[in-house]
Every structure is written in C-alpha cells, then in structure tokens.
Length: 295
Image (cartoon, rainbow, N blue to C red; front, side, top):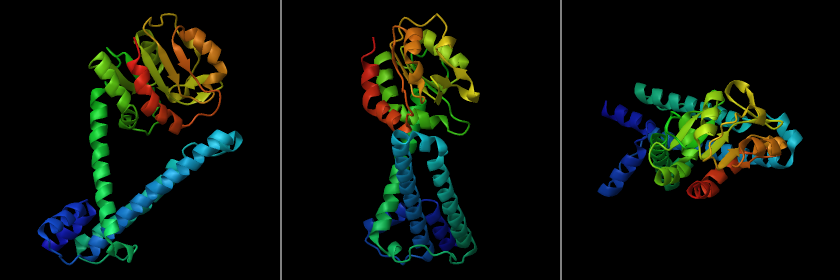
C-alpha cells in the first residue's frame, strides 16, 4: 500500500519534495518506474509550452509582416496547438496514474535514457516552482483589482472570447495594478468584461482605460461581437480621463474620430493588425510609467 501511494504521489507533484528529502538525508533509494515516468511527463509538458511559445512567436511574425496570410490563419492557432499537446500529456498522465493505482508498470515508456539524468529532476523542480509562483502572483493580482466598476479610476476592460479566465488578464495587468494602487489607493483598479455598460462607466469616471479586445475597420468589438465606435461615445467624458489604449486591430483607421470623441485624453490605436505580445510588452514596460504620471 505504501508503495502504491508513493507511486501515485509522483504523478501529483511530489517528486521535488522526494528529491529534496533524499538530498538532505544523503540517501539514495531505488526509484521506481513511475518516478521516471512522472519525470518524463513533466518534460513533455515543458516541451509542449516551448512548442507553444515557438508557434506563438511565428504567428506574431506573420501578423506583423504578412497580413493576408495572418487573416487566413485562425487567431487562436497557437492555443489549438497547445491544447492538442496538453490532451496528449493528460492521456499519458492518466495512463500512468491508473497504472500506479492498480500496481502495474505503465505501458507507455517515455524518454527512458533522459529520465535517468539529473537534468529532468531539476527541470521538474523548476516547473513546479514556476507554477507555484504563477499561482501566487495570479491570486494577488486578482485580489488587488476589483471585479466591479464602482469607485475605480484605472480600468482594464477585456473581451474573454468566452473562455479566457479573468486571472489571465489580471496577471498581465499586475505591474500596472500595483502602480495604480500605490498611486491612487485601494479599489482604484477594476478589471472587468468589456460591454456597453462598463465602457460607458469607465469613460465617465476613469483616468486610464486599457481596452483589450478585437478591432474591425476602426471599431472595437465588445463581448458578443457588438461594434463600438467613436459615434457611440457619450458626451459626458470624465475630465480626469488622460489615456485610452485601444488594443484592437485597425482601430487606428478611425484614430482622428477616436481622438475627437475622447478629447482631451491621449488615445493609442493601431492602424494595422496588432499582437498580444506587443500589448503585453506595453503593459509590462510602458504602462506602469504612464499610470504613475497621471494627474
């Protein structure tokens, strides 16, 4: 029974603890097949994310330099690739943990030579540490930003496309949220879905608005694919509004109209296809400075 529980524990993340315990006690216990199989699955997960980042980078390059080709490729192709790879990992993980429960060796043996090296053990420990760090930061990022629009002055309005969780946007806006709460106090940041009500409220009460959405022909797309353009902006713009970032593709085709509708705020738009990578870079590198400089 003890051996079964030990084998199961390898598949649910206890390998770094087991490895650290052996390192501290200077013991070298014999490692089972399931120990090495769990290491191999961790390596497969790591490779899956590397492939995802490579495909994401290639897709970003295509968006920048080959508009027609980019429009012919599904926007979420990198995530489709990642999803397929994660399904493969899940199937192998389930096969391994079921084998551990019934007390048999897994029928699928991955990277038999590589799993005997310290590299995979260290990589597994790194993966676990990185995952724990992401979870901690995501929880903190979500907690310092409101999910209601009242009282806020700094807004991230997002289109989740029906499947992206809020914490992903909170994670990307983390540095900006930290600067904003230090500058304007608690409850000053709101990260909420993009719809008519939230964008109207943000324009009436905000100092800074980041709109994370798709764009078409100068319009931004709200949730449920509702078009929102400069003509939809009401006349009661907040006198404190100073910066509006419209991330949608081709929003710059109506840049003059947006500037006129949102005056005197600075409006950042794109007269081309824009990419997630450049928006993320702006949020990390430039956004905090912009928010800190707001009056």
